[in-house]
Image (cartoon, rainbow, N blue to C red):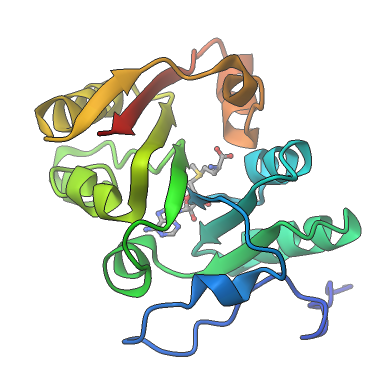
Length: 203
Ligand SMILES: C[S@@+](CC[C@H](N)C(=O)[O-])C[C@H]1O[C@@H](n2cnc3c(N)ncnc32)[C@H](O)[C@@H]1O
């Protein structure tokens, strides 16, 4: 059985989180400072890779908790020689609340977050009542949160929580973002399940 090796420390795009208390110094992640965007639950990076390649004027931070997926993305991004992408392997909730500084991002992308379909598991959903305030703290003025899901019931919850949240305007998802299809999205769409999009601008 062949095991894929991790990239050496000098080549990896995975940024080590060295403190559970001190916020990550985002300026240190990139050699060149540019407007930053964040993807949560990026999986093995079908969106983030393409988006980073198409938007060299942005710096992209992609977060994922599963080692196998982020390792695969790390190898692909390294092969593509991307300089504007850094990866965080972490649990999103903790990082969002405690390790990222306010007013850091022009956009946050969350695509096909785990739907936790059973009612007793709904409390585990990332996009719940507290999420808009958490994400608003991280967004710069006029920053945008982009959401996609295949799950109609979770989509309704997303609309409800952002509809009730203060300080957001609902906007259309631009075609330049929509046209990048994620792996999960391709799979759902091939089974006839459409993508539901929502986007909100922080005002
Ligand atoms: C259904 S997959 C979607 C992956 C990718 N966004 C796509 O559309 O192809 C959800 C991803 O989010 C990750 N994830 C779920 N909850 C997370 C959390 N709390 N923190 C970090 N990653 C999370 C999962 O490990 C998984 O890779």
